[in-house]
Length: 154
Image 1: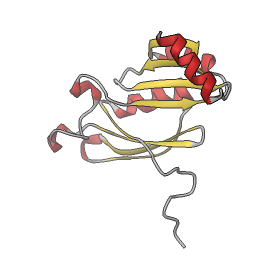
Image 2: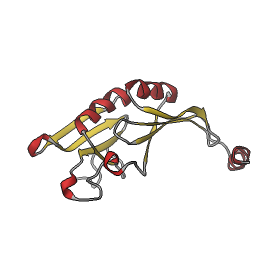
Image 3: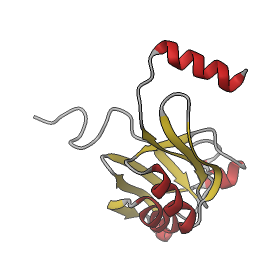
C-alpha cells in the first residue's frame, strides 16, 4: 500500500524557487552537506524539480519561471527578499555556520547561546534564502524561559 507521506519525508517539506537552481544545488552541497536525490530539467535546461536531502530532511527546489506570473514561481532575487527562514538543527552549529560562510553565505547573526536553549546563528545564502543554524543544548523550564526572556528584552 502506498503511504500518504513518502518514506524519508516529514509532513512539511519546503519547496524553494531559486534563480540559478543548478548553482544553488552546488552551494547547498558545499555549505550544508546536502545530497542531491534527483533533478529534472525541462525545455531550455531549467531545473523544473530538484530534491535534496540535508540530514534527515528533504528540500524541493526549482528554477524561477517568471513567465508563470507573480507568486511562488519567483525567487527571492526577483522579489527583493524572502519571508521565510529555513532552520537546520545539527550537532555543531558553530561548525555548520563557519562552513556556510566559507561556502559563500553572508552572516546575519553569529553563533550565540539563546535564552530558549539553542546555540543559534543565521546566514543568508547567495540566492536570497535565510537559514538559521542551531544546536539544541538545553530544555529550560517554563519559569526559566520567561525569566531569561525578561532579562534579554528588559
